[in-house]
Length: 206
Ligand SMILES: C[S@@+](CC[C@H](N)C(=O)[O-])C[C@H]1O[C@@H](n2cnc3c(N)ncnc32)[C@H](O)[C@@H]1O
Image 1: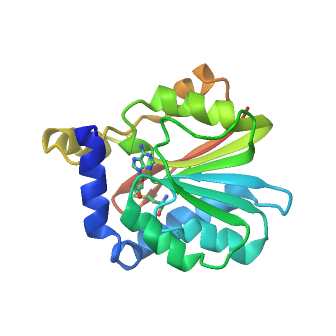
Image 2: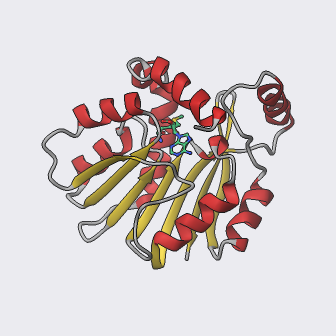
């Protein structure tokens, strides 16, 4: 297996049990933004790409009974998600890498990618996979780390030098360009901050 993937898996095996509580305030803020853009409906079939502990799925589930697919490469994060969503007949949870989605073309009405894009080694490949499995006029929602402000550029460099399990964050212009190349039309792009964190809300349609 690829060593970067192993690094991510090791990190989240260590963090999984304390993840929700440790990052509670940050997660509440980012999940609120994702839910506002996602607007889940009963008729939706939603992919949570890199779903982690299934926090977002829990929020969607409390709001509306739609079809949910959760994927992640961490067994330990998915195990927390499985406990959270036990007995939910509309939710499927699978271990899967976002670079190679095991779903048919045009399968989902919405895809959400939350707090995870900076881990992906080949963002172009991931976005082309998102585009492939998303229906025409389907919606992609992202909340991603954003390298626009100088302090986050420095942070990005530090993360690369220290070889944390991290591939790199993007500027808002870079992310918009990547989405355009993958056939998406960006309908919303808004940068915001949560304490130290610089984030970008993106809504794009295929
Ligand atoms: C910061 S957590 C975010 C989890 C969740 N979306 C949230 O906001 O709470 C990042 C997640 O991305 C997952 N991840 C990283 N690279 C991945 C990949 N290539 N395919 C699928 N999941 C990946 C990690 O295992 C981890 O669970």
